[in-house]
Image (cartoon, rainbow, N blue to C red; front, side, top):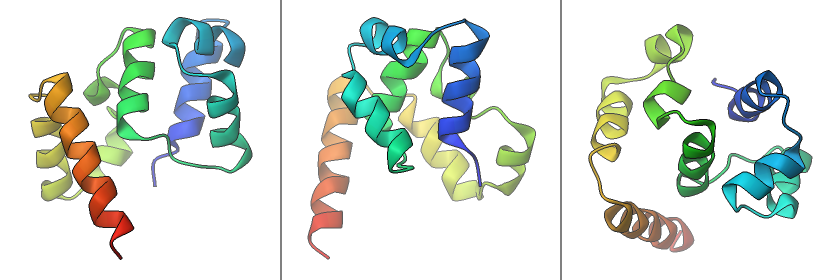
Length: 105
């Protein structure tokens, strides 16, 4: 499985950034970023996209790891590809729908 937090750490350290600097540049509260690490949580896709923008990369570039791409199903690859075509408003709507679906279980 792809280590999202490890990738964020790697990208941050390549730039010599602290989590505080990432927080300030991305607009994501440092407490939120710290919680991801402390609880080993996967950042929500909308926040991950903001982090990618802060690093100057796309989500596709973030996940551009041969091992990850090989292990991803075609459905997952297709979903990621389609995600990149959505507007920010459409992405927010998708995230809200996913949240509703997950909370209804």
